[in-house]
Amino acid sequence: MTVKSIWRGGSKIANLWDSEFEISAQLAKKVIEEQFPFLKPAAVHRVGSGWDNTIFLANDCYMFRFPRRKAAVPLIVAENHVLPQISAYIEGEVAISLPIYKGMPSEVFPYPFSGYVAIVGQTTAELAITEKQRIAIAQPMATFLKKLHEIPFERLNGVGPDTIGRLDLTVRAPKLEKELAILEDKKLIAEIKIIEQAKKAEKTKEAFVHGDLYFRNFLVAEKGNDLAGIIDWGDLHIGNPAVDLAVAFSFFPLEGRKLFFETYGTVDGDTYCLARFRGLYVMSYLVFYGMDIQNQQIIDEALLSLKYIIDE
Image (cartoon, rainbow, N blue to C red; front, side, top):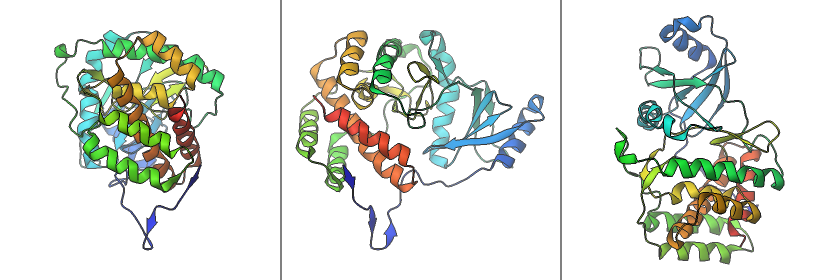
């Protein structure tokens, strides 16, 4: 698969992931020490950044996430409030980024932030893993999502519905079709088929969902054959489980996908089609994101994911 340029008329298209506020390791150290003086002297270094947050490791054992833009503030607030409520429901071998330090806006840094015990692991964009290792992760991922989606969400406080239309195909489908036209691939017909199937699907089920579960938002163990943790919960909401089940298509080859659904349980045809569409949409978007930030690891993983999604 080759990729055409996303530049038009000599200027780059503005993107949703562009930062409004970048925080340095020096400033992060100052903020952490001011609000959590018992961590002094804090040895802080930058680990990386996503669309919404910049991440720092403090004292080799705590991860701190600082919003990069104002739109990310409600997401970090939701994480800080909701994750402690769901932790008892999903106890097990898979860790979550449970906030134990909840930072407040100040004159030094204008947004709330959070810190949690560092989860030992890497994303699969950082750690190249084999198909065999991916298949080994299918069961623990499915077991985790089964527990998550069975949480009685009516008991949760402060969790809202999907406000950005993650499965609104009237908006998402045309956008995806334009992106796929840029991504040259002989299997484009198969991709369009996935979109058409999803357009006919009914969105009837609701569950508590992670909301943004793809290869950068979960960690695998050092050997690559076990699921170590689920991170970045800012998109949590009450919505269609298809949003999370997209990972079954985008991360696993066919054998792993089969094992995933054998563990998770059978899903109806509409959920299946919507999950596949969601995976296609997110991975297509990530190709362009990877190009924009010049991260070949993300590009390669997203292109591989597109291949998995198309396979039948």
